[in-house]
Length: 437
Image (cartoon, rainbow, N blue to C red; front, side, top):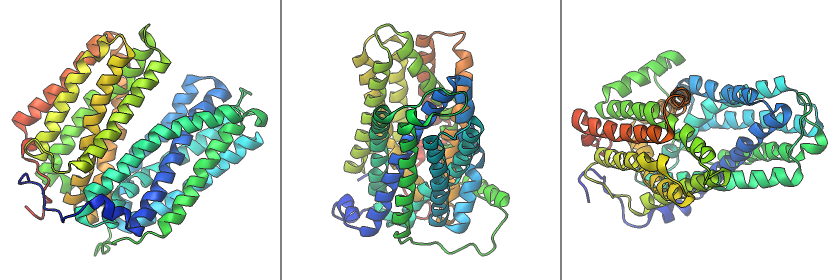
């Protein structure tokens, strides 16, 4: 066993977790909610396009969801630490239940106007800013510390499964019951039944997951002796993470990855599929499906091989990232679906394996009183910085070719991993919690 891996009790931790009724209540409700989210993820952009046919309006609606989420997610993390993840998560479920219930009713009755879509999208984005840190901080309050990796593996694996099944089910639902029709800012009821049902099912998922969450017993941390103002609490969390050398190094490294890599990945892959004659929309879906399957397999592998390391945790992260970067370099040269699918499968496998371990490491390392702020900062890096990277990528693509963009993106990740190895303490980051060291 590597020296940086804490000892674990004998037996299969996943089997023990699945026998725990408390964990089953939490994970069951979480899976329902994640599946419902996929229905809205498909139905909302389809609704906007059917109402307006305008991609600029669609971009505005998606911005109203994503920008408030990025702006308020750190504040959400501070409130989670002050009030407990369960309390904050329960409130967000009720808020989303109301918002999506109203949206479903307006679509089904034909009374929806575009300004209402804007307002409800803004509300959903704000609620998400608080539900994400609450949801990601819940696990250490429900399971024992030595069970975190197995619990995260199950949770993230179910999330990946819902991301695969949800869009398929939502698309089938909308196709069977009606996908709406353009009607100058409103939706005709007779043609929008499928969209309305999709929103209604998401609202139902929030109702059911709120019921299951109410049955979850948590290991509540004691409240802080002197509650701070929210912004001061955010600042306290950021100061703590900066003083922790390992956390500071990892967060800065992941920020660089989000800025230089995530945008090209999100923009260049669909452009590749649409601009290559041998590919197309079906090929794009196949490649994304291969990436999702690889990610799920990687998460399963992380649970089966929890002690697999290439030295330390930090060395493993850098080695996996270097391989991922190398796999991205030839993406711009593919001419067949199987080539892109094979590359995306391997990339997803490596990323999924490390995702479980990184979540567990943060949850084990950070004091429970700061966990909400830590997880919100981690999510902000990829949800707040990635859109900036995507916007810059769209501008850069006007002057470079796709093969050049993929080569530069993959090469940059390899260089970042090499620089982190040579110039930062990243290679010394271990799995051991801070208290144990």
